[in-house]
Length: 197
Length: 197
Image 1 (cartoon, helix red, strand yellow):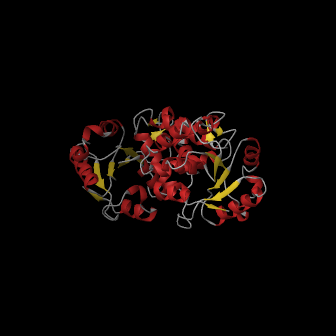
Image 2: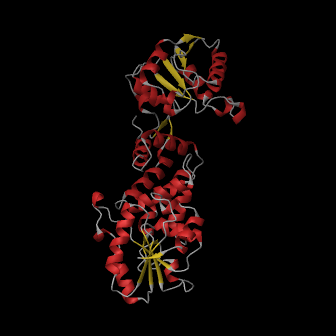
Image 3: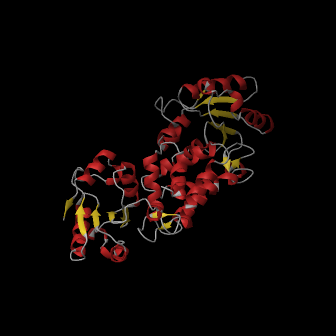
């Protein structure tokens, strides 16, 4: 229609997963009807994700610092590391408030079909942490699905002989669920019932 | 979690209608995993809606010019004005390609329950157009629902005695549908079957 800013905003919003052209159009016209500042503020918040977010030097979680608040905190147990697939999983465990150790974020799980092998995950920094820090136990908290189980098994084999206790969170979670959306109670239970691998 | 850019992006995206906290979180983490430039480009497109989009001096449709391309075009019939509720409705009629006149966008419909009266709509610029331009016919193409019918009735009364033909698009559209999402064929039919008010 010759209306470049609207067409561009619709095209850009349509790139987001689960947002089709119709939804994008609805959102853009909603923004155009909103008080001044709404579209600009939302736009700035998205732009700020770039440059403003990096990976923690220690645990690879997303952070706006060199070290994330959990790694930098003196109040967390230093000897236990909970290994998760995604940064969202750290948020889920923190909401369950059943864990006082620290985390390590792999940024994915082994999935040959998707072309994700061990080299694509943050495994090397995990090994370096285990070597240099005084870590007693590694809790493998990857998702209870095929990829998560494969990743846990791979890490368990890799850590055999390193002299660290390796456990897997209990299958208190229904098979196929995603940790990100699990309820806090089930997550606490799964942590408590973790077993030796 | 002390991660200000992520928290802010989630909070801002959650302001959009139909986007809850979980969806916003999913979108933000998708952006963080996307190639560099993705979040910045989408963010800029949203910010550009402000300042870049204004209302056409003639028809009140959204445009990035003083006059929109349809009003500025010499190829459109000058004597017929199709009055719609929303800019999206102009897009829908243009897709149906059954109309060669021009438009007028009210930016809403009369709805006392929502506090929208005639003063909130772009009715005054419509009257000015009818007075100054050589307009023979005003087609009332507000939605076929309670608010759209009330608005059409209000405008029909207002234009009585002005010496202009006033028609209402045919109820070829199912009651309760929104023009924005109607199929092109039904829209063409509804225009053809328009009736004297």
